[in-house]
Image (tube, rainbow, N blue to C red):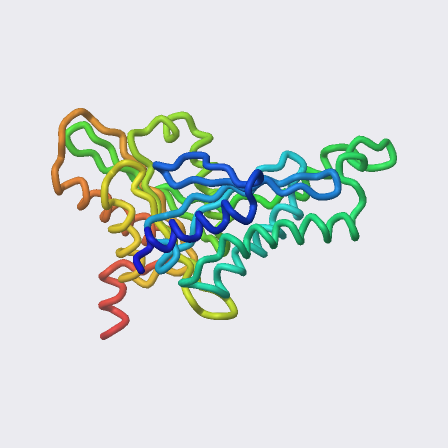
Length: 272
């Protein structure tokens, strides 16, 4: 069966299992959510089924819960990433949903009530909570490529989890100029520490096939544990196939700038 058929079967099964908990956020974009409630706390797991899921790439997800911060959020994200790495090529949404439910049950058994502890005078003030937040990976910004008023700029960062990928993209979009760009295409490749299998995905952001080309470039240059985002500001003049050349060049250049890959001349020197 192809991915679309597998996704349709999975969605039908999950909607029957979870009934009222299951929500269709956007059928056209294949975005769904499940709200899990336990012990007075709730987490909404929002899942986007990518074209490559489940055979080639994972679904994207967001953990929607204002109280879920810092180490708690990172721990749950690591559990979900691990489930995918252990089940590459298989349907995993049910496993994700049940892991979130187990996480809430474990939290009630082992941890104090977070909302009460934050408001309690006996607990250190909010700055201690901020200190627990994992910093965003360092982002390297490449030089701009300009062609017929269109501008391309690549950004990259070292990542080891999908959560860090989303963190990098969110951090970039905090810049209004980047957030308002015509396209912010991205691709990443992460190698699992235990299995050695690659966790990878991409997004065109409206520039058809761009994300896939970026991911293919990451594969052929052997980039591991990196995410690359290419921002394009459209100048009003269509570039045709040249736009893909600029996207690839911007991707390769920023990876070389970061040290993720070696420039071509250095590779030649190593062979001699």
